[in-house]
Amino acid sequence: ASIPISIPNEGEPASSGQVVAAEEEESASGKYGKRLFQLAILVGIVCALVFGGQAVGEAFEKMRSGLQKIPVWAFTLGLVIVDMVRKCIPPTYFLFPVGTIAAMYYGDAMGAIKGALVLKLCELTNAVVFLVVRPLYAPSVPN
Image (cartoon, rainbow, N blue to C red; front, side, top):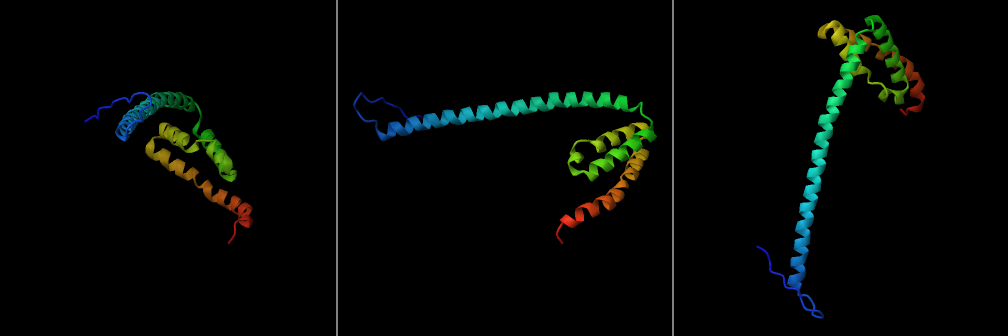
């Protein structure tokens, strides 16, 4: 139900009904514009996820084929060294996605069960890291 709007002649003050109707019309068009903007953002996010996911998948496939050329012992040694360094120096923890790469490598090289077992054995280095890092940070942590 729209309210008819009459434009006052020059010099005549606008009635309160005319002002309210004009504000409602502006408010309704503002709501539609906001909804349209939100829809455009949503479509943009979905497109970014779809196309970005495809690019990440292609990168992982290239990495996976490259990792197959590395012997298991060399990868395990490198994993342990990088993992210990990144846990001893906290800011570097976020620089290396070791867990994902290691799970992918061991799963491809040894199968799911053996790969998971080796990965968990490599995580025993957490005990060594704890023993190394604890004395370094213990004096600065209040009791």
